Length: 365
Image 1 (cartoon, rainbow, N blue to C red):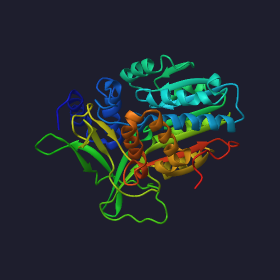
Image 2 (tube, helix red, strand yellow):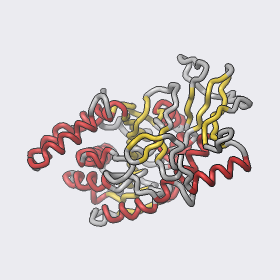
Image 3 (spheres, rainbow, N blue to C red):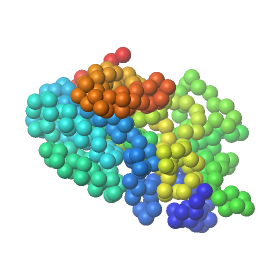
Image 4 (cartoon, rainbow, N blue to C red):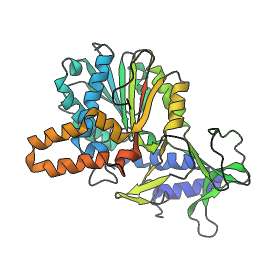
């Protein structure tokens, strides 16, 4: 572990106030106003810490753009539509989506695009990427800022966004669920995980068909309900949302918190503030939160299934025919997105919609 400025800040807080929750640790590592990873790190791309689907193949963003256009048509082709992207990275997905959507008459003319990203460095990249978008584009620091704007028909796209929301962890120890926390090691002053044996998490909700065993770890994201509520505030008019992320379809046990630096997996305590942290998305709990807020859901389905039904193979064939010199690169990128042992199965897609909106494209089995 590197004693970064944030590591020193975390240690001082723990010395003064005691151990902190895993959720607080994750929140500080990503969002600390001075040293948080998402406050300043460019992160994405070949030179960053990780590469997302839009950076792997332009076909990904193009299909999402056409998906949005079809959903707009399902809504009755309203004259105005707010298109929101949560965590838009470098703006690559939105750029490709808007380019592909030119083939749908009237869609782009209806659009107002709103991008939500806390990372000031990336917002500048997004502005450059979308400078010639040809539609109104606005930039926001938080989703709550959009509430006053998204009063009409709205479509939300979020790729690799949910996995960045802070999670709490609980350990089943001594026949009870105990809070897992971040503390300092005895004698070496290093950040480490500890189980708070004095704590008792009495209200940990579990599906009826699973029973914990000694040492099992359960992860819960309190922000699922928060974002479900945000979506609900936009659902007074027709709303459709598409969430794509790596995770699991049903609630289960396991420690999925990971650090990523230089496109390699590292300890969550590696260079705090300079390492990306994420956790697998529990799509069952997020779906439950959305349905609890009065919204309908479709899926989750594997990313490969969604992209396949949206026509990624056909799109790749056209791109390869039009760009024979890049045919190998295009094919490799698409295969990476749909590989059954890789992103194709590890990433899932969930559709969320308001009452009255038809089941969303790509989710039929």
